[in-house]
Length: 112
Length: 108
Image 1 (tube, one colour):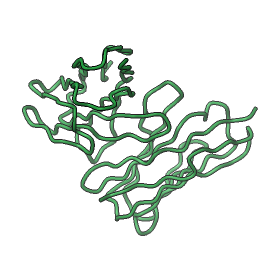
Image 2 (cartoon, chains in turn brown, orange):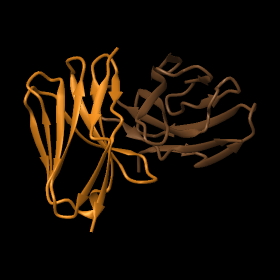
Image 3 (cartoon, each protein chain N blue to C red):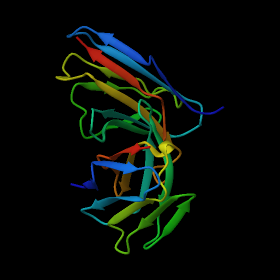
């Protein structure tokens, strides 16, 4: 079955450490996205990529970094510069932004 | 910048009753999408509306896109416990912007 796999599902890290969240899709979608969701809030766009080897900052990119070396993979690194990294992180993909997005099951990151 | 506002934030519904959630944009949209996120889950795409005044139905769910393509609504009839979750609208202009969602709870 085609879909998006995010790993791990839960992640605990100490303050000051960088951490990388994995996102892999086998849908052959060109565009991939990273969103952050905080309790009671909507989805805020962190980074997006419309094609391999290219990515753009979203609304809240500070303290995050990404890469898009392969069409299937779009990992997100949460750096120590991110002031409040504890959140639910969602990866999504679409063949084109005019279509609906397919979301992964998310990673819940807790920084202590 | 582009903003999508969604009301109400919370909707507590008696099982069997109807309810509506509304989505409003500050700018004209190319399309509007609706997603459902079950508690502890991830958003799942429900539907997309593209044309001015478009109305689409999925069983007990009715989606509408306004004539000016700035607002949309989701109406659920005869609410069931399976309708529990958060419903997000997302409007596309230059980028897709999500509303804050309407979280629905159902009293049996």
